[in-house]
Image 1 (cartoon, helix red, strand yellow):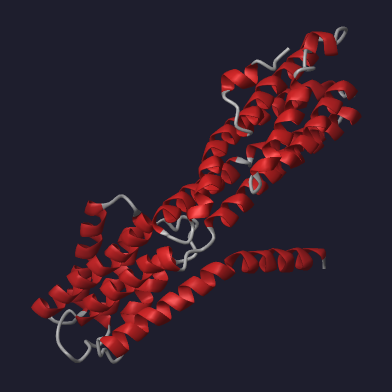
Image 2: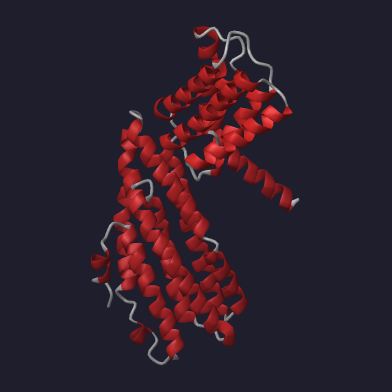
Length: 354
């Protein structure tokens, strides 16, 4: 029952996040089909809708250049297939030649595997379906219509890139909170197994960084062409700087977790180190808030500075073994990275080191 509830909750969250894309794809596909049907007189412009749907898709990277690349790939596959169909007709051998040639040309033009697959799918539709009435290259025209409508949709009915980027940034910071909370519990209890779980969670955060970076870069590109997203440009540009800082912070968090896991092999609790990790957690909450509200950045900065300025391992752990002080030292570059995520330069952040 718990597993079912988790699946339902995950599916519901995924559906809610996909609603803007669903609306955009639906409107664009219907508009492309309607334009080809009513304005151009095409009886069944299936290709126009298919190209619009495929070019937009549910992919994370919805930049205009990616939409254009997909539309070009599909149009290329259709045009090549139509030329070969006119020259050699239909048949198994002709289809095999057309498909192989389309894949070869697509792979020559780009290293993007999805480009080649999109071209091959459209080639298959042309070679295996009955030709439409009205003459050659009508399906190529349909593909151009679908691609044009997909490009227009990215500018005129864009998805909210700031919301998507903020969501991914929050997920990364939530990973940091989870890792530090596990480490604090492990250090209080002297539990090496719990610290190992924290280290494993820290190692899995790279995908979060990649997801956030993709959303931010995609959002910046869309905001450049959409007149409706001018207000999002500042926040997206700020998040683009934050991605770099939190990428470095994520790498340093793995070092912090690895040090703690190694220390706890002896099973000895380390409450001072636990308290240090626990104090960072609330400050990360302010950093997460700053993703959507720049006014929260100074609060996060002040919180990190207050922790960092007292982080002198020799004074904090005067009688502790060298390994404990080394573990405390590992937190310092992590906090410097978090400070740069609030808008400071590395040099400015380091001035707060004791």
